[in-house]
Amino acid sequence: MKLANSRASTGRAVKISHRRRRITSDDLHLSSEAKLLLEGLPSPTRPNHLPQIFPRVMNEIAQLWSKPDQLDRYFDELLFDTRGGRRGFPMSVALELSTLKEYCQTEVSEVTGLF
Image 1 (cartoon, one colour):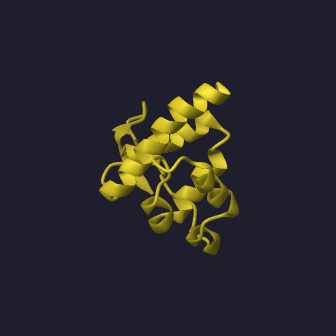
Image 2 (tube, helix red, strand yellow):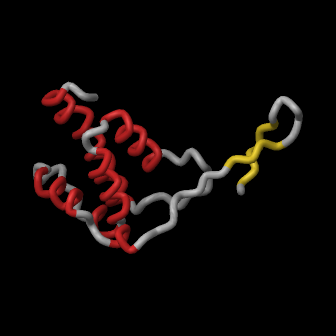
Image 3 (cartoon, rainbow, N blue to C red):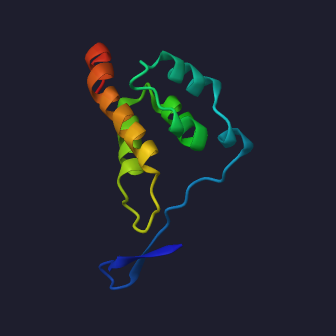
């Protein structure tokens, strides 16, 4: 577990755990839900590198696609390092994530009124 720099009111270090779930074999391949989402996206928005390099992330995006508040938070978690010391995504993937986020916030929200 990682110790936070901040102290609780008692003066003791606060334990914070930022663990992600274990990788399963399903995380190594695109889900049918993710494939359907990719097929339905307009070509300028459709990511190419993200699903190939990080199918787990693409699967999660597909799962959250109909939950705009959760999806927006997930995009923020992916694009902004809140834990410190993370490597981050390759630039091509980061750009695709930003494009997808923007598409969700503009195009999808106008149609569904969700964002």
